Image (cartoon, rainbow, N blue to C red; front, side):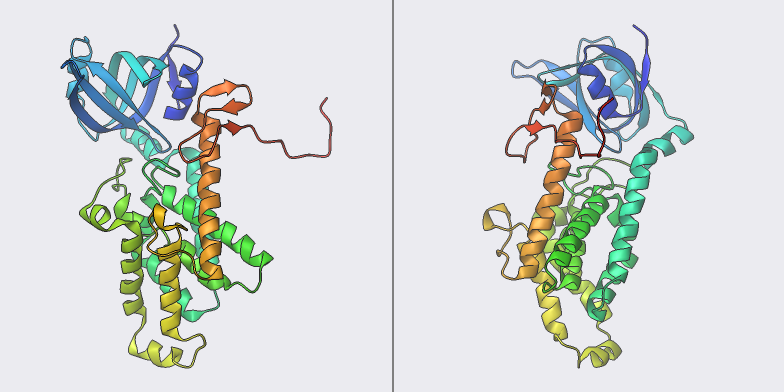
Length: 348
């Protein structure tokens, strides 16, 4: 069997769907745990990740490659070579070996590849463009305060741990997607306060910078006391209030005093959009949407998240037929291949 270099974890997973393959893939060892089976048999569990996906492999205690895997330092950037298969329990690896990545290889891995790097850069540019298009000076100042204070943390955070955009940089992708969807809805319904909706889109998940943040040099979605004890909705509200205090200087308060709507009402409505964006109490929102802008944000958020779930299903889920993929968690059913867009021509 000829050894192959796989450019990503997703590419490797897709290859194993066709059967056993031998090759290497560049990843970070994000976690190494010693576990035991129900019968007490020990094994090593390795969590491996790149910019777009992750996988977990088990290394049994009696495997000849167990010692090498135990020597692999947690957090290391490595090229892992193995005989790879996929079964009902996930990825399986035999004859495992590894080497540290060179500095150039590590840089390529962290960047996520040209396509992902370009997409995330475009997402950030779109976010800044939407902010700069705002007319309300209070919301403009608030949004700029966030991007100036937290750009690096924002751009590397994940949007979730598993549901959607669950990867380094996922938060900026998701936020830009929600802003695009919200802007389109506001164009269809001009009476909706576009500035407010866009501000809500920017801030609705900003607490995930602490709930699902990523280290400067890594792919692991980290845990924090703040994220665990408060959750991203509460943290997002706290972020807005703290930034609001910073922008409301004595000079600005005097300048904004005559503006309509009142400045305090603007702050209150931003907080409501954050608090209600999950849509229903059962999904963690402390209140349901009670304004048109809150309703728009909730649906824009849901649209972007669900479309990402479809994309991931088409790319990584098991093929049940040539056109049907097994559903991803969060979707209501299996993912059926979409009807291609009519291009005006005919097949040759």
